[in-house]
Image 1 (cartoon, rainbow, N blue to C red):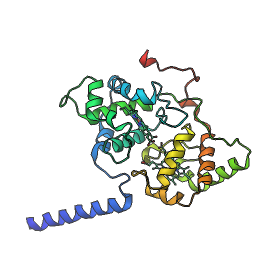
Image 2 (image 1 turned 90 degrees about the vertical axis):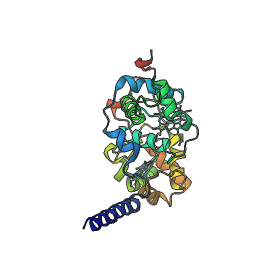
Image 3 (image 1 turned 30 degrees about the vertical axis):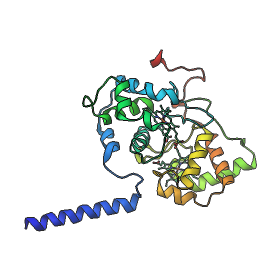
Image 4 (image 1 turned 180 degrees about the vertical axis):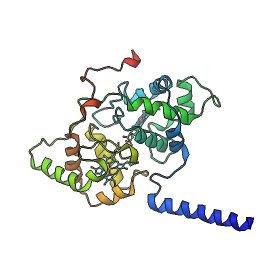
Length: 250
Ligand code: HEC
Ligand code: HEC
């Protein structure tokens, strides 16, 4: 009886794993650091301490750069930040520039901990909670086609037909579902990510998005991303001006 129960459990577990893999294709599997960090209570002071290492590239304001080398992180949904950071740390999303800085040793050293003194997932919880509260860049990098141009209008239509169901009407996304906020993100960064997602280079990409955009030409991509960059960023998430400086690093 016991033996039977155990093999039934093993079978049920194997089935659960198989369905997860097929349904999500390695995009958002359960378990691991992401789930752990989501359950931990974040500490703002430690979040600020860890963020210092991130600011070297993403800047103290979390605004990244309009040339697209570094994405804006400020104002991103916390679940998205946790998933992306955990994926980068686990090398499920390639980011050779950032990877060495996101390792346990780095995030522990900068916040004053040695190995064994803190669970690194706790620091992931701390820094992502902090970043999500940063006000966003009011002058992010926009695409070249102004509202009213044929390219803008075509991008608007492509967006309505292919993106709204996940990234929402104005690019706000959905944190609960790990759909990134793309309003306010830099044009050049999004062009690179969109292309990598379409061409299968971003390994943690959502398979449904990959399927949705597989027939996009490079011109379609330009027009649809252009449209997103002109979507107004929700006011409550914006910094008061482009001269705003993060007061936590005075
Ligand atoms: C040496 C530079 C560098 C450092 C330091 C760095 N990053 Fe990054 N980060 C990058 C680059 C470059 C990308 C974009 C990579 C790409 O194009 O795929 C990125 C992407 C990200 C993303 C994904 C954003 C998105 O929209 O999907 C997150 C989240 C992130 N970084 C968080 C952090 C955190 C948290 C830290 C500090 C612990 C950090 N980064 C430190 C360079 C850096
Ligand atoms: C089925 C849902 C879905 C659809 C449809 C979809 N996306 Fe996405 N998109 C996602 C998810 C989920 C991610 C994050 C993937 C991950 O976890 O790495 C993402 C990531 C992105 C990114 C990278 C964001 C970043 O911060 O790195 C961009 C840009 C993007 N999508 C644009 C679009 C555009 C434009 C369309 C329409 C042409 C679209 N997406 C359609 C779900 C979707």
